[in-house]
Image (cartoon, rainbow, N blue to C red):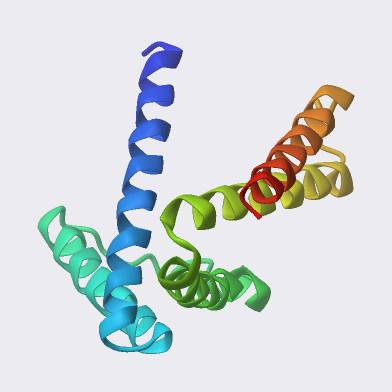
Length: 144
């Protein structure tokens, strides 16, 4: 498999994230950001169970005690992300929310890469994040 399969999958995932945010934002208008997040995760869990049962997945019991409790924090972070995205989309729109979320992801990714000593953290990547932030600032400023 060439690099293009990974690029295509990442692009498709990005399209699905945008669609998911829009759907959750609309649901949030009819309910609330918290209830929208609840339904997002409840339906996601049900779909995950159906997929797991269809492929015959069985939950591995070995090694669960070796997993640090902090490794499960992703679920809590996900709930905050979905609820806040639902709230934001209803107020500032999907495109602006997506740009700000991506900027936050880029900033935190560079910081985490530096903190973890990940190879390949270069000044160019940091400059790229700075350009994204400058673009957001410029875009907001030109509208106001």
